[in-house]
Image (cartoon, rainbow, N blue to C red; front, side, top):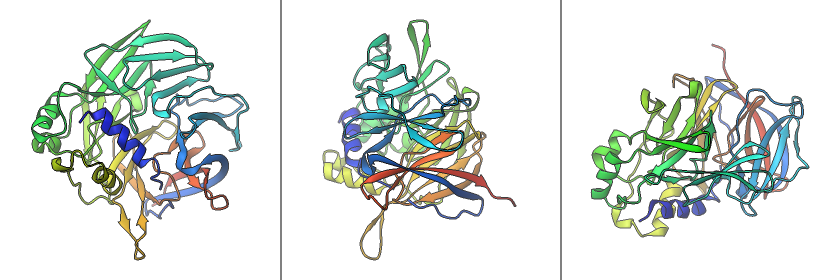
Amino acid sequence: MNPKLIRMFIFYSIVLFSCTEEKENPHLSVINIKNFETCIEFKYIEFVPREIKISHSDSGYPIYIQDIKSRKTFKYNLTNDTILYKSLSETKLSNYFFETFLKTDDSIYLLKLDTKNIGLLNRNGDVIRNYVIDTIYDPIIFPPADLEFKNNCFIIGNVSNSIGFGYKKDRFKYYETVRPILLAKISDTKLHCLAIGKFPENYITTGDNYKDNLPAACIGKDGNICVSFGADNNLTLYHNSNQILKKEVKSKFIDKFIPYPDEKLFDMLYLKNYWAEEPKYTNIIFDPFVNMYYRVVKHRQNKSEKGNKLNTWSVIILDTDLNTLGEVRFNSEYRLGIFIPTPFGVILAKSNSKYCNKAILSLIKIKKNEK
């Protein structure tokens, strides 16, 4: 099955997966600073990637949030007094959040699904310039691998449409051959592309399928690229195409990963349940304001004594050498996937107890406890 079609199915099947409350950690403290109400339904709220700058204007630090039901994108500003207000200026974007990267309000990059063009658009949606990706590559953007951009370089997922992935005999070749991260650097009016990275050893030696042939990646300190696979406990740092560090960063909430059976390849109900129930490392995020990495962890779905499904998740906090500082757990009150670094803390999306279908943006701080 085409990996792009698989990812589209997974995206729509997990849109309703939400997540919640932080648990005490002996090494870390989570401080809730403020909550801000929104008009967006909790199950439809997503974060639109933007350029993270250490400095910000007096009007506040901009955050872009999308209602994926309407595909409308809203701009919020977080002020120095930690007041979050919705901007009156309209953002005319109708593309999915993961296809879009906002350098500024009037300088927007867009990679449309199933194309090999990155467009530079203004706030009205007018195309200023098109950058063409080399035809030998098959770029793909899909959560959690949002369109990343820093220092004139994009991080894009790289797949192969010529090598099969559905069956084990095909995956041995796929894992050995495909470099899953595509670096696309802007130089004048052109893109220079370089495929980097490799699949984990347990993928290569077993040929097992974990439904995550596209890893999460982010640009961290010194321009290094941190890569995280969904069913691998290790994190890897690259500088350009050179691997400079690999380290085990295991969640205490993951016991094992169960491969997806080949005989269920075309069973969409089984796939939906597998994706909901299996644990995964879903994202890796760099916070330049505190020089930390956040590895987002989806836990195995369990049931309470009453038979209710319990969707918990956590974030592993790491320094720039990938040393683990601690792990903080959340439950389904907070939405998995929204973890936005700002100069004043981290923004999460939280369900509104007064208006149960609306989302709250919650500003928190994570601090190391004194010994």
